[in-house]
Length: 286
Image (tube, rainbow, N blue to C red):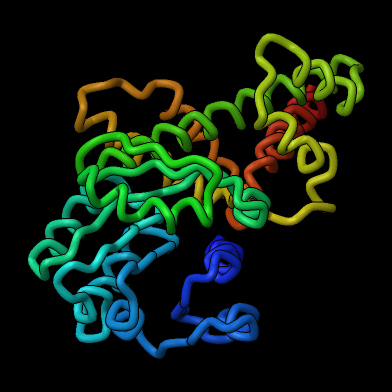
């Protein structure tokens, strides 16, 4: 996700300093003019706006804290855009830590996957002060097609969990009905055509069409492991807001089954393969 986003910042004329735990991954943007730093602290020290895009909460904690972390490099007046999917509680804690150094953090996760990042079609969901959001907007506009300011610190992170929770439920339901249609004699591609044209049609069905048709032939964009992490955070959000997350709990358990079936690092469309395998095993046992 981060690499194409950096490319759009460079295209927009921003001077960019980058860091990655695997330094070789910085090479493509370094060739285009980005400066490669040795630590997250060095990135924050070089920038007025620091952007973090990290896999999970544990990685975020590691990148922000410590002698070489983002917090160590911040100065008063700096702005931080935390664009990972880490949940509202951690986002607010990081915002407090930034405020102690005179900086402001906006939780700014995005909806969309690698193709959307490549085409600058991501959607940003932002929590934090409105004035800080206006400061951040030129940077966000370089990387995203839409930017939504949703309220106080943590609001963007909470909204991202809501979006990804719905992806988890949609992916499971789509996998179920697709496999049932196939076992009723309907070709997979025709079933997807009807679903896309129906009242329940959504961009997700169109976007994932080729992956559902032939998962071996497409790039992995959203792994079972990462979606399961997000659904776990969504369930925590439900508990903290007293909202039963019934369908999300089922989708989370389905991802547990997919991971146990060996698909943890595969794309979430492999849920259909899990269901096909179960259905075939039941039929063979009769």
